[in-house]
Image (tube, rainbow, N blue to C red; front, side):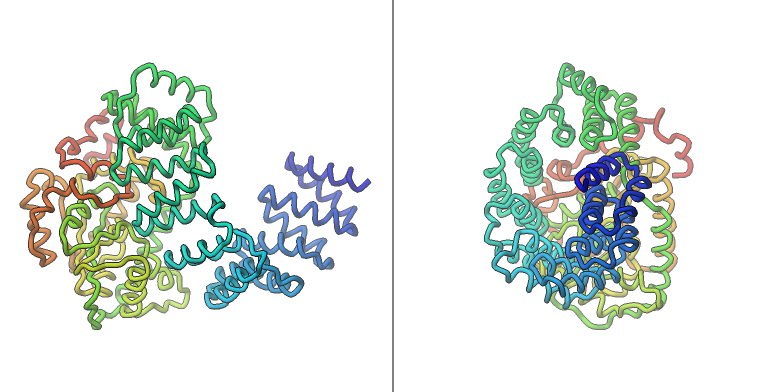
Amino acid sequence: MRNKILNKLENLVLKKNYSKANMIVKRNSSDSIVLVYYLDLLFKNKNYKSVISTYLNFCRRINNEHAIKIFSLSLIETNNFDKALIYLKKLVSINASSDNLSLLAIAYSKNHLKMEAIDNFEKSIKFADSNSITYINYANFLREEDKNKQAIKILLGCNEYFNNLNILTIITGIYRDLQDYDNALKFCKRAINISKNNINLLLILGTILLEKGESTEALKTFKKILDIRPFFGPAYRLISLMKTPINDLELDRMITFLNNSNHEEIDIIHLGLAISNILEFQQKYNESFSFLEKFNSKFRDKIEYNFESYETKFERIKNIFKKLSINTKKNDTLKPIFILGLPRSGTSLIEQVLSSHKKIFPCGELPYFEKVMKKSIECEQDSIESSDSLSKDYLNKIKLNFEINCDFHTDKMPLNFLYIGIINKVFPDSKVLLCTRNLMDNMCSIFRNFFSTGNQFSYKLEDIKKFIELYKSVISYWKNEKTNFYEIKYEKLVLDFEKEVQQIFNFINLDFDNECLDFHKNKRIVQTASLIQVKQPLFKSSLNQWKNYEERFVKNWINEF
């Protein structure tokens, strides 16, 4: 009889007929096996709210470890972190296992109780039977704290790390974050030896090779992926960025496959964007734009984006700026150069140029300033961190993750333009470089590029337009406040490169180095959307590219921009 009930519940959940399933659970509420089975079904289907309501209605009287665990995890998934902590403490009191201690540590971390989190993570990995998940949970916590080297140490402490694909993949990603590409390749290849035809691992390998400038080997890797899974969108999109010629027959096959596929799938979206890039390379701009607009829109439907959150954030930033005092404590060890502006405005190019100088260490796009500002921005009591405290927190994150033996380091996070005035106060001796570009070209380039993370405004022209308007108002505000930054105009840089670069070094107060003129020979790794362009000499063809789409591309906005 019970098996029939369980099978019926499984079918009803599969059909999302929760009202009828709830009636069956209500009739069998005295049977703990039925209750726990139903909770498990709901959780596996990511119906976390129903897990919570079912537990509260029927399960509180049963002291079942698995039920409490599923309920607590659902509380975490729905951001009820304080309640999750209460129930996970109860769970550990029933059974202080490695897994349960790891979950309790996660709850502590979500409640910003870091020392308690570390204490429980440490306990969780001391068990002889600790599994890989406990180590991964601990490492993910450390990564959130920007303690990447410590995260690697924890993962390497797991007895099964050398045979565990998840751990090897995470270590590969951390080494990429640390710009240690030799180790990233070593661990990626070790993972591939375990799963030789794993297309996701091969995609990571190809991407690393492309970032290292090893384009021939990268292309071989992407083609191997296509041998394993023909028409795999992400591989084709990366090939298309390399501007590798695709013949008409192959392109026709790609389009035919696309037309017969589910356009909502992320792999197919990548394929649509790859076709757009190939058509642009063939100078078939109208066709290219049609694919771009359609599949950008498909991706936009899959992500969350709230423009108002940027407006609210900047209002809070202005309040903080007015209250924040200038940091009077000197920092003699690390001197930041902040490179910022709209995405695709030339920030990667400028970092590549500067990093060719022996006294400048490139750190790439760092989330650190955004992270140290988060507490002050989100604080409801209107209290703010001191400029000295913000400076120390930021520089500590740099020291934890990079070994810098240069006078300067770069931070190329474009959206730090929101913080220009605060950067001036926190780091009075820092240099701020604002990259600007013809806004029509800038908008076109944003729309044409796929960003692996962030920049959610990039996939709909109206969203980009609104964000650019916000950007203009932010820069206008910082100019009115007489903040200190140097504006680099991309068009001037392209047309008179040596003169403009010399002026940048004058602003930084650093002697000009002729090697900076050969920036494309710089062997440093670039992870941004510009990873291919910055390995090439400067080209004037990037100017006025938006005119290729003049008939299709926001022609009503030309006067505004």
